[in-house]
Each structure stands twice: as structure tokens, then as C-alpha cells.
Length: 326
Image (tube, rainbow, N blue to C red):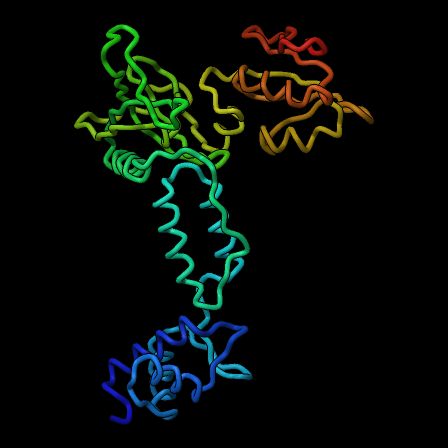
């Protein structure tokens, strides 16, 4: 047969263009016909290829003709795919099989000419249940339902072990929370939620949640949870830079002006500054205290002093437990 069946040749031409062409590797009608005949033994002609390409373009497929021939304009460029694959490799919330499966599907999107900049095995322990936990949390948020789960820690055997109840020492501790949002920080997913017996927000690492289930109980009214009145994820992350739960306080941090970039990186562009001189400035920082201590130790060479704002509105020295800070 000169052109094979209509549907068969149409799909074969599309497959060849998607797999064997891109902006740097264009195919002539003659080359497409040769490849289709070699791979699928259809005996199609150049004219048949042209008709199929026209049909595909008329139906919205991104096939482009430029000098040198035709090519499929892939939705994701090589640089797009490199970025996505790098993110997957640096993220520790997936099992090796899940990560490799996603990368394999992404590689197919780039066609046979695409080769990632680098592929490596990240040496991180992972929770194979992570995708299912994430799905449960998203579904619970959509349905305004509480979730229950156990929380786990890694042992030296690189296996997650559930935390035990401190009262009933032979039982695994169970958490029931109202989930409000999920966000990523430092390549980790965090659940922002409320534990029913408290009136404040807390967060859990999603990749350490196990045995997650959606309950029939409705979420606690966000207006009854401190911090949810004007909740903003960006603000929450900037106030908990090392992801410790706790009350957020106001601090006046005297820094060298060369540290302004670091303040913005960790506490956001909304940070206010006062009393600026040529080399120093006061940064007004909202943060959870333990997070600020860790940050201060990391940047101690750029920090002159730290004071914490009291409920009365005065400032008192904030102790960081470093000999050169007070």
C-alpha cells in the first residue's frame, strides 16, 4: 500500500517528529518517509508525509518548518527539562523508584536527541509512602477534613521508625491535626496545621508522616487558630527560617551593611531597617527565637548585637549562647 492506513501513517509521522526532531535536528519529508518505512514498514511516500504533517498542524500540533526541514516544537525545552530533573534529584521526599520513574518519563518528553546535563544518585534516605501522604493531605484540605497520622524519625538503619507515645510507652503516638497548607523549603515539603488541643500553628515534615488517613471531622475554624487571621505562606516561612515551631517575636538586630543581602534571603524583602550608618544598620526582624539563634550563630561575624522586643514595647538583650553576641 502506498500510504498505509490513514490513522496508522498519521500516528507514525507524529511519533517520528516527536522522537527524532527538535529545533537543532530537523527532518525533510524524504527523511521522515525513510524512517517511517524503516521502523514501521508502511511504504509511505513524501507526498503522504506532507499530507499527514498538514493534518497534524491543522489539529494544533506544534510542528514547524524552517530551513533544513520540519521539527516538533517540544513544550519543554532542554533547559526546562534539565531544571526539572535537577529539582527531582535534589529532592529527598521520593523513593529511588519514584524519582527514577519520573525522570524516565521526562527524558521521553525531550525526544531521542535530549541528554540531561547530569544524572546522579542522591544519597538520601526516602519515604516510599510520601506521594500517597501528599495526596491524602491535599484531599483533606480540599474537603476541609482533619487528618490523623504517625510521625517518624530515621534510625541508623536508614529506616523510618514511628515515635512512641510518652504516656502509653508501648503504643505509637497518633496525631490528629487540621491541615491548612503545604509548602516547600530547602527541598522539603512541610504541612502547616493545628493540633486540636493548642490554639497555634505548627508544622510537620511531610516525608516523615506515615499511616496518614482522612478523618470525618471538620477542620478547626481558622479564625480560632492564632496566626491564621492574616495567614501568608511567604510570611510564615520568613518567620521560621530553620523550620522550628513556636511563637514569633520581634527583634532589633544590629548588623554590618554587607549582611543586608543575607537578611533579605532569610527573612524576606519586607524586613524594615533603621538607624543606618555607612557600615551598620538595625534590621527589624520577625522570627521564631530558636530559628533566630541558629541564624545568628551562622552569621555571627556580621552581627553586632541583638535585642528582643518585650510585650511592653521595650527592647532587652537577646542571648544567643555565643561569646561574642548579647
